[in-house]
Length: 315
Ligand code: NAD
Image 1 (cartoon, protein in one colour):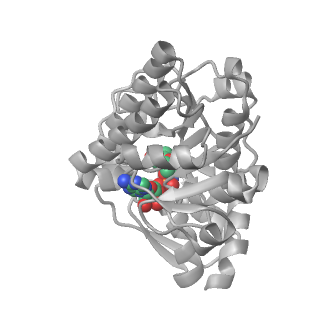
Image 2 (spheres, protein in one colour):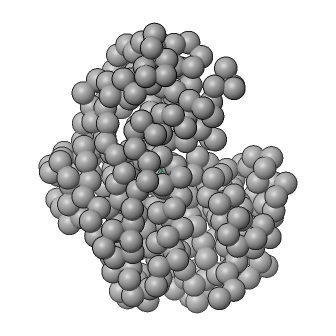
């Protein structure tokens, strides 16, 4: 089938890597990157790039028609830590961008949507260990509320209008190619940079704060694989639980110390600790494994090796 893909939010942490990965699969000119801000040189040089506001329905529709887009990956959002500072802005962006894309699909202008949810849909009353797919969901953050609401609308549009929307609940994502965009798990990227640069890191979460995490390559594979799955195999139309590993700041420190023995961590907690306290520690992703064959590949020590190998040249 002829696919032409639009990525909205292609300059972000995930969008940057997703764009290059999809261009590798479908061909550079079949994957249109867009963002409200300039993307990396690599993205602009290798294929089409458009400045596009995810809030502007007419502008998105123009791009969809001009490039004969079939699939949209909506990656634009305001993340957890930033959303606590700008609640209404976060709500407007996270919800209206989703409605724009769901409505395009409802009206038959695109065939398939990927929209990411997050472990932030869970809240303090959710079982923290091996959190099931179907669980109590009482998110206590602006971001979590927007993601949970988004999930409900995705399922509604699928059931009511037959919209082919697919989603996963990403855990915290770690990459060396791009910086994170204002989330609560950002520490797990920053710690590698600071370990290489200063051999010390001041962490805003406490040492025992275990959270579900994933290396970016696994997240990109999950994203592309759920989009490639046969429609009948995608049985959950709100969002699939997805997992790879769980660790706390103490454990990532020990993993880094295997490469940088004199690396030291100190703790100075801030408001992000409250957000982290409300999230699960580990996730049961058995339905993603069963329905569309999800399988993570990279664990903490393997990730540390990759991060350090790829970042050490920069410092
Ligand atoms: P990011 O902040 O790095 O990137 C988001 C991009 O969206 C940025 O490039 C930004 O310029 C763009 N953007 C913001 N407002 C826009 C607008 N009005 N129009 C067009 N573009 C706009 O975020 P990310 O980490 O790449 O996350 C992508 C998606 O994945 C988000 O929905 C996020 O909630 C979700 N997610 C991310 C993580 C993670 O750890 N990174 C975890 C769970 C879920």
